[in-house]
Image (tube, protein in one colour):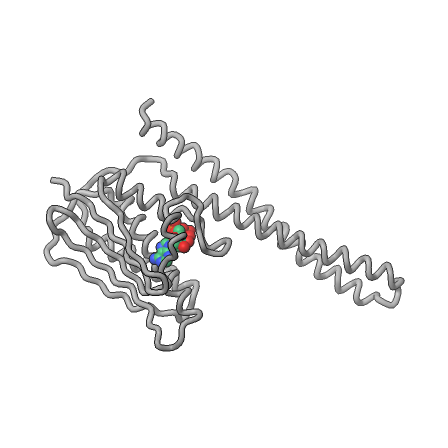
Length: 262
Ligand SMILES: Nc1ncnc2c1ncn2[C@@H]1O[C@H](COP(=O)(O)OP(=O)(O)O)[C@@H](O)[C@H]1O
Ligand SMILES: [Mg+2]
């Protein structure tokens, strides 16, 4: 088998496994959430019958219930972590290899930029970002793998949205979250840029940016798989280059450069 074929079948295999694991994991999480509610009911019963219990028995029961609650929370926390890892694997492993086809790049980029923004607004009501878009006029359809490129745009935009949202949590009112997007063709290259004025990256983050499972986000919010897959999409599948610039506290700019295929 060629390396590509091997990777493809590994992808199908892991997507299958990920699907299979997702169901039982959901059971684990849901049942522990239910048990947590039952524990609350139990606590109330104990409280209602306080006078019927001996003081040391009561204390012991309270301790046990407290421990059980803590354990339940741990089960939920780690279960959700496992779910988010699995969702990351599902994101990375695709069954079928995408194909190059003539694509309206501006339309694709616009669609996924706004998809990402709307998704984030669904979670953070009332949070606004100014999105500045610059699409070169009259750009012809270009040969790319549309489903891969859209995932790359989505990943970068998700990160940009998160970064400006995060900064807005602590910044003062003068801070205006902004993302600038541009698409242009120059010198035989398609250039797509995403610039945000979020928190930017430390040197450590820059160094580990593309490592799988590296994330600075809280459990359940990040899988640390987005940048690795984005680089693979741009560099391995499109023979392009993914570069970034970032100053800590000032934001980050990501540039995808893809040679235009004739
Ligand atoms: N636009 C950005 N601004 C600041 N940090 C970023 C940005 N994009 C990526 N990062 C950093 O890179 C890490 C890895 O990104 P990624 O691979 O997409 O995983 P995830 O988004 O799940 O954390 C993020 O956790 C974050 O620390
Ligand atoms: Mg990400």
